[in-house]
Length: 227
Image (cartoon, rainbow, N blue to C red; front, top):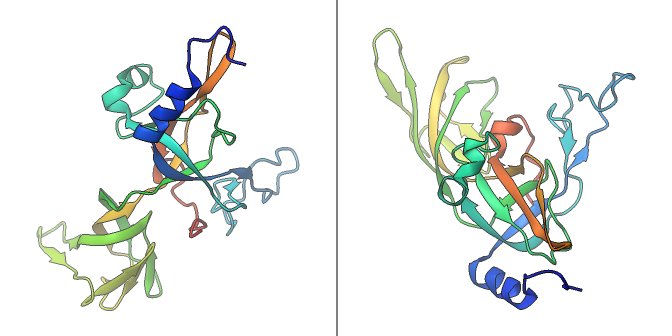
């Protein structure tokens, strides 16, 4: 099976056993929400299922073992070529992986909360605003008066609580006010662009994919990944 290839299956298995980490892979599908008969893949911006992204993830995640590295550390050539940007990750999959990733699949590494400099949110109606990611811990939440430079801080439990991607206000800023929130996040990543199929001597030696933080590709994707 592996004639004409210098890659050794036993070495490949040992590499992933030693260096690999568990992820959850969510398979992407086109969302059939569009209303343009001339372009059925054009999404509906008001679709509750896909959030206007044109993609949804109907199936339970696939758990598998991959190797993930920072693009700046191991593949700076991808940045130089314009295929990746700083902050992206590179995911290498085994040559015998039965579920190779595809473009727009979602990847959730099973590590703890990672520092995230956060986001600016406009205070909406109701009691809840939505974060990009599941928050493990909220470090800071502030508003700023641009005319005076005065910073107003809001504290967990006293002014708000959080659970998953929901930030629930007790003592909220005024409606329409922009506020900045910094937190530790459980990141989702999009396979972007398509995975690179690697072959050596006619043998499939596994794919390599660029992973980009989900909010940079699909900022409005609903929280469908609780499983």
